[in-house]
Amino acid sequence: MRISELPEIGTKYEIESPKGDKVAVIFLTTGEIELYVLEAGAEKPSVTRLTPEEARRVGSVLTGALLTIEHEDVEVSFSDISDLRINIHVCPVTKGMVGKSIEDLAIRKRTGVTIIALSRKGQSIISPPPETVFEEGDLIVALGEREQIKACAREILGQV
Amino acid sequence: MTFLVDLASVTVSCLVLGLASKYLRQTAIPAYIIAGIILGKSGFDLISSEASYEFIQWLGRVGVILLMFYIGYEFNFKGIKEPGRLFAGCTDFGVNFIAGFALGLLIGMSLIETFILASAVYISSSAIVISSLIENKRLIYPEAETVVWLMVFEDIILAILLVVLTSIMAGSLAMIPVCLATTLLLIVFTFILIKRLSNFISPLFERDDEIPILLIFALIFGFSAIAYLLSILLPCHISEVIIAFFLGSALSGVKSSRKLFEATISFKNLFLTIFFFSFGMMFQFQFATLFSAYFILVLFALITLSVSGKFISGALIGKRLHGSLETGLRVGAYTTPRGEFSIVLLAVVIGTRTGNYELLVSLIVAYVIILSIVGSGFAKHGDRIGKAITGSINKLMKSER
Image (cartoon, each protein chain N blue to C red):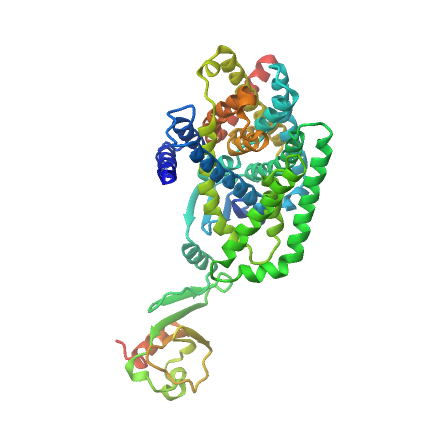
């Protein structure tokens, strides 16, 4: 990886593959991001200009990191551990859960799913303790295998 | 209230011609100068009064101060350590400055006019060069870094040239060292003062009200005013734009100044447009001179010389830094556009005394208008031009054998 400063333009990050293909990411001073791909031997590069939000999404896909999608399942796989696939489910708490704690609901025991985070009024609680009581409007982030997530949706959230 | 009418004609004419040039995918700088020529003294003289003319010129001068402040702030020396860069910068300066200087002497200009002409020929337009690198999708190529660096190096030389040229313009020979010394002292003073005050200034920049923007303009105008007052006090010329440049450079080291700096950019864009207009507006256009065979011949020679100058310096730089003639020719093609700096340099150095330098001013104005347009064309097709020239050189070599 080569990093170079381009005054008045921005910062350039450049990678060349063994085949001679080049990929460059340029963070423009305007805040936008340009993505260059130059195939070995090609006359002209392909270029696209991304907003920071779009660039983050592309980056998340490439690194296999967590995605920020609400009410949706995200499957994360890791390039180093090919058989590990983790599902992350983000959803709002349902009526039946309000006023009960994680311990009361015995979420892990019943479904194998772990609640890894909780978003309450715009603030996040990472690894909430088992005595945490759910409130209306909370968003929960649950982690588990695909089957476990399904079981959780069925038994805890009451979704079909 | 006639000011209002005049301001309307300035902004509307610039808007219309500027928009037209953007649609034609051309750089807008010549459009603004042409708008000024049409509405100004040598055109239809549509500006209502002498006072208005002066007012517009003042706004334009603010534009130049803000431009130099901008360049000073963005300026960073860090790149100079990379191998070959100093060579690249010096080659660019050496080849092109000498080319301009030789032509100036050849057509019998005075030494000082020759100096100004050579500077205007040397300096490329950062605005056009950089935007064409982005638009033509050249940023992934290694020569893009070299070109951007050349623009930075030209900024250093521009600052030095301005200091030297304004001092020389002081008039009497004895005043030149005095001017030079005062300017340098003022630059040092600016740096020390900003460094001393930085603990006091930077919390003020963090406020959310109008204080930060007031502060940054107070600094810009304050230091410019010091330069102006000093040049009245001592009968010599200390350019306020040089001080603005170094003020920007000093402020870039102050914490949390970046947001405010960004806030000044739109002011710079507006007032710089008015500057180009005002430059065209004051231009004494004389058909007899402009269409004389002599003038056209000189202009043609100047353009040919400066285009080939940039190609030659580009080729030398490419050979040395990238080991390839073709890459070098591309560097040459990208750096051919001339624009804002040639005009700014001319305006700062000779001020409003255009009458005394009629040939020089007409020459540079026509030169910039043509080379900003032609140069953007070169920059756009740089890869094809590079290939075509190396192709024909190779053919020549083969047939010689």
